[in-house]
Image (cartoon, rainbow over all chains, first blue to last red; front, side, top):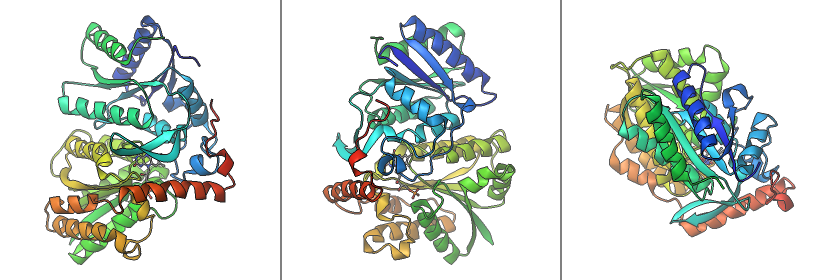
Length: 194
Length: 221
Ligand SMILES: Cc1cc2nc3c(=O)[nH]c(=O)nc-3n(C[C@H](O)[C@H](O)[C@H](O)COP(=O)(O)O)c2cc1C
């Protein structure tokens, strides 16, 4: 993949129709903004749960010891210019299909520690990391939920060394034009396509 | 007899720090007359009827505790899946569900890195009608390393005391006390030492697996 490519991790579950519509709109807006966007529907990919063995750091450094669909997703993610987490907001966080994929991607960083802004984090493994955009889909107004989702994406951006990041919740009960405006704002926040 | 149900959220097949913290808390609850059962996420999800069974078991208890490791600033995917499943089984929010407490442990030395995960647990409670009884966060979980807390040495003294206090309060029907939260969050070793030991740990583990020279590989470059 290349710098102008956006790789969208679609975390919708069976029956998440309203969130699926947000992902569809997101892909269209990414295209409008000059990104070559591609999405992977995670629920259709076989991804075993991370076993917490740290083999991806100490046995097969940089690669998970389980050989399944997560490997290709990890490769595409690190090669993209913009990595997008698109998910229904579930208790303020990510839906399980997205979380399954992310748990398998810790091989993208080094196991070694470093201090960033007074906190311990992992060192880089790759010379460059994609920008990160988190797009949550949820019904109704709920500031606390939205802040929690944004905080989670911000924490992930810090751990994934995303130089630039943006996050926000798009309301599924708002008319299409309002949703598009919100998505465009998020795309502006994460920066123009190269 | 009051009942508690512990869900261990570590996906590890063998001993886990989440399991050790949860087991120690259950022992304290037992001392106060609370009878407890333990479930592990992998087992719940392996059984097609597991989520329904878990929902029933939670409903039959007075206290539901989840103990899990921090994964990517949040809950491990199998725990998210369990929460989604419980919410689906229960349907719309209803009162009268048991109290709910969470114990999180993470690798980084700052317990505050678990704040987002605890906030997600709190929302899960609010959205499903469980009554939030508070949470404990432990940084530097590697120091426990899955060992039973009674055998994990003096370094985890504060952890044990925090769980003693939390167990007593939860058994009385109270929330996890602030002083337990503070004790649990106290660094187990000074940060410089933690960094030194931690970084050495990865080097030794890679050497053991014959991967020392490949530690910095970039297979997807
Ligand atoms: C996929 C994965 C993601 C992790 N993410 C984090 C993290 O974001 N922050 C952190 O401090 N530790 C993180 N850890 C480390 C675990 O939280 C830590 O090793 C914990 O003590 C394991 O507990 P357990 O024995 O109960 O499984 C992660 C570990 C794994 C395997």
